[in-house]
Length: 510
Image 1 (cartoon, one colour):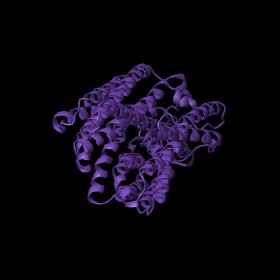
Image 2 (cartoon, helix red, strand yellow):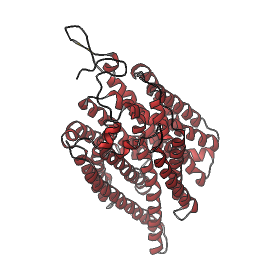
Image 3 (tube, rainbow, N blue to C red):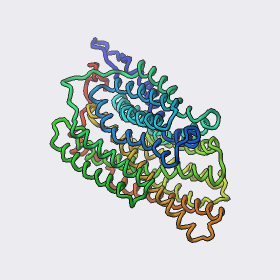
């Protein structure tokens, strides 16, 4: 933060940490991009990796599941560790660990080695993602600058998947699948150098709080069971006892976690963080957007590659206009519209736009063209996501005491991860059921019928995705408070007033 001199001139002197804040944003954005795009980069490379290492279709899912299980179950722990250990230290640990695991995965000579590397990637990703957002939250406290910073961060969170499709397609087509993992090493090296120079190491005041071990075990187990349950539903179906057993166990563990947090001396997640009306609405919005976005990236990718015969690189390029629309909307939303209208207007508007875009996608056929039929809905969805994500992420971390910035940030990533897991399982199941029903109703099952069945299954998914976003629009409109309504009582229990001094003791110029 900027310092003021104690002499009579009162000439402001900008502290080095404060003057480097925009470089800090660059480093944090780079780390966030690496985590977000990793899953789609690897997904594009999976067929090539399978041909090279010789694993089966049944085993293939574990390349994705191993990462998502470790990442999803350890997010809250990673966020809390950043509060306890120090954000710069945890940020660097996450970057180095993620890079090393990526290098091992890229060099993997067997299926088991690749799965193990992906699990370790997920573990360090769970440390890195919430820490990156916490660094941003505690670095930018001036409202106008905070809006700009979160506009960039939200755009990356929303567009990272599409960037991964483009990058993964290029690396797989022109190099080989191993570079889909090696690329993380290059990104991490740049981010480590930047973090060492630009990310400040805030000094702790007061005694070090303790880690809530019972709460950690309960919530990690609950999140593991949620992600595993939905992943199992994708492969074995909703009738599988393991699917329902894991989801039931997740519910029991989550209830136990909430009860424990009410009496814990050093709670892992103070309940007041999520009980604040605005913050709770933001987490729900991120979860719903995560579930709906899955239908866009995965099934539009399937449609472009299998129905229209696009190459991986062409598929990635097809998403570029959506990324541009998302980035533009994110900047306009956070810098112009959110300060004026608040998330109560912008998030429902974004949800409504995304729903309209999904409905438009339902009209696609085997004869559709990109320019005439696909470009417009992708642009609409891009504008919608650019209105949802930055406003939600900024609201989810607004006003939280810096002692809990890490775990509050982790809830954003947890919401997005759980939403993605729900979307993966539910939409895949709906698509498979729709395709099977279509083929059963059109005998004999010729190649033409199979192609039309795929189109029918995609349309079913888009309708459900539109339903997700429509439901999200209603929830956001009801739950978010209007601009100027102030903070709730629950919020005041964890929010710290703006201090006259930052962690290093410098005086803040108001």
